[in-house]
Image (cartoon, rainbow, N blue to C red; front, side):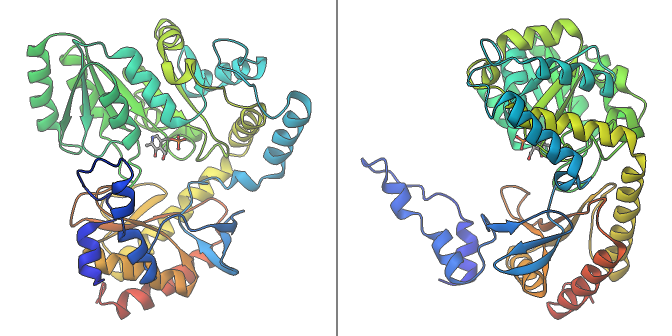
Length: 413
Ligand SMILES: Cc1ncc(COP(=O)(O)O)c(C=O)c1O
């Protein structure tokens, strides 16, 4: 199969009408074709991913595709906390938070997280994805409207679709479009929840909260910020995007995940105590699914302690991010409006993006290849992200390889 034909199909599930429910699976062949061309960028099994260098297919690669922003998954204190919790409390809670799955360690972590982000209360879920589903399905009744930015994470979109209310979207970070959508939502009646990412996961730009918050207030709406990537990386002490702008009081709900800076898995939402208690009773992805196991809770708890006690980690992350962005920009790569550790290398054309990804991997640099529908058509990119634990030498070497490969493929001049 030609590369162009493959890209036309974009690894999508074949659309077939067939009496056999499995027919679509048999017809789906574009992933096989991509594998045959050596251009399949997904589900690559890492043998190890402890830090700035990972091991893939027997080779060392400089890791520029991890959300382990603070490098804490390899921190001995975090690992030991998880191991101790497994020994003391076991490997699973074997039940939902509602019934036998709430342990004292969950409540202690919730208190610490609420204090960390400056809110009255917090509620822990088993994943970040479930957190977003839980918040949106609990709060959006059939007369309510969810207003989402077009670049919002898929879990927010899925949550809004699963909820009973209406869903409307506004152009990414476009305030005039937000105003238009809010005016229309007000006419419809019911409550309005405006939902944005704090630090956008693919292009690494921030939501302009100082402009968004007054529009939300003026419309009598509420503001929910998914700060999966901002917490631990942005704002004073890593307290996230709302704190970065000094707007914690104007953001009604802040959500975070543990699968990035917090070196674990899980998620939480923080906000007014009454609202959190309501979500606690109506957040179905939490009520009907087992709770976060103690080792994961303990890892987050330990990671939070390290973050609070070692602010220099955040400084190193910022210095690395600045070096990485400046290096790519100086070579002529298009990196959009990246402001933090997530730096997109925007290529546009999908074939060239795949070749860039493959050539960099062959040269020893791991990046993530992001194609439609994760980004708009003609905006294919490599998502790169730096960690506090990258040494300048790692980044300098990766920049050299980006330059050689980028020139070779004619992506930079
Ligand atoms: C912005 C954003 N929100 C939510 C999630 C879901 O979090 P998790 O992977 O912890 O379930 C992610 C993770 O990819 C994300 O990037």
